[in-house]
Length: 603
Image 1 (tube, rainbow, N blue to C red):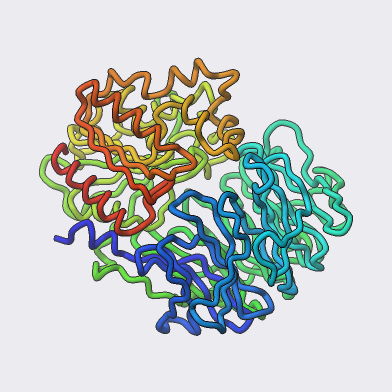
Image 2: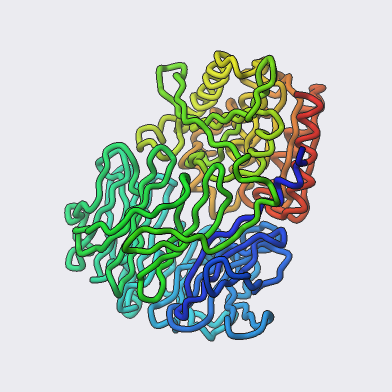
């Protein structure tokens, strides 16, 4: 039987970008951390182009030169720096373009002529993001601050004539605005003035200078809409529908400005559905539906003439790879050959999509996976709760999950209230004072598991990371008799100290979801697992990164100390070179080998 290290050596290739000469650049974790690699043709032997100990976060090829920009932080601190790599040069032909290690830099894309690029950064004030434009051959501080922000700004891209930038501002994960920034005049035109909360996301320029975006304004799901060029700044009445679906989210559109070819995606019960065609104003003419593995796909990059595109695809039983898709036919060809570490693909398990009824009658979706052979008396179950909470568990490849399944565990992945993908109403069912209703959903899911004759009800594990780590701790304290063990990965133990110590640039966004320190402190204290620790019964494993800027290390330290004082069996593992999650393969192997041994002992 294959051990955990074998499963954690399953590789991933993703985040592809075509150069103007047809070279495919992408990220690949063959060395243990994601680095930049290139390919000249499908399934050729790839060439490694960067050789760092830290993970590379993204890659984007210039539209006019054989060069690219990539981003990388240090030790998971999320203070990304931008670097330029000459594809025609040697492996050391890399230039640090930003060289401000104390600041975050969030990529905003190349101008169409490839002479400039844009980004957002909190250089001026750690708590806010400004917009910058920089020449491709400038380095360090030689850049232009083109707009001072007052919050969380993101550059979405350059207009077709490179005279304007599309900029979004987030007030929370469910309330955003979109603006057009004129680079000559500095005028900042508000496209989406609105009252209340509404999402205006995935904004992109159209070929004619109009703007496409996805919004749930005055509707429950995200629809694709357009502002015509003459209507930029005319308000929401000027939005024209392009693609609407009353049940599922239309997540966004990618457009090639020269050919008007485009692809949009829908999220249908967690699965991606892509449609490729031509866009002309609000008219979309379908060409094809790509034939990809059943699961999740995205990250579109058109080649030079937009006859084909590269994208990343993954499924529960298909590890992550880059595919090339013929725009006319939808025929897909896998470009990368990310290894499964010798594990037969047919051994990987596909989940069943189920729904269970919660305490108030709400139907909660979940992915339920059973091992190929269910042991007599039923399988132990790992209840794996996603982070966010504005997120969704989707059917993508997870090597740890497949290890559990191969070793006799079932895996249950609920999308409790507050998850995205099921409409705006569903996402707001856990806001602030309703926070614990999502924990009650987890308990209802355990009730559903108890009714399955394939499950051993005495061997159920709570497992989750980030906000999912809070859910683990809350489930262990609110429903202590339900659990055989808990695994908390970079989780929140105390909402007050979490909000006090999280990165200043994130605090306002998080308070919009959880409640504010000024107005909701008493409530936040009441729901914090650290203040209910006397109820915990199950053994606990706590895993964290010392450099975590989102959920600071103090959250792990608090829960470990208090649980031990209560006599709870606790194991703690801290990595000094990790941030919000465990990214390096050698650390993942150590971490999850310890987790597996812990569960073997207690479950």
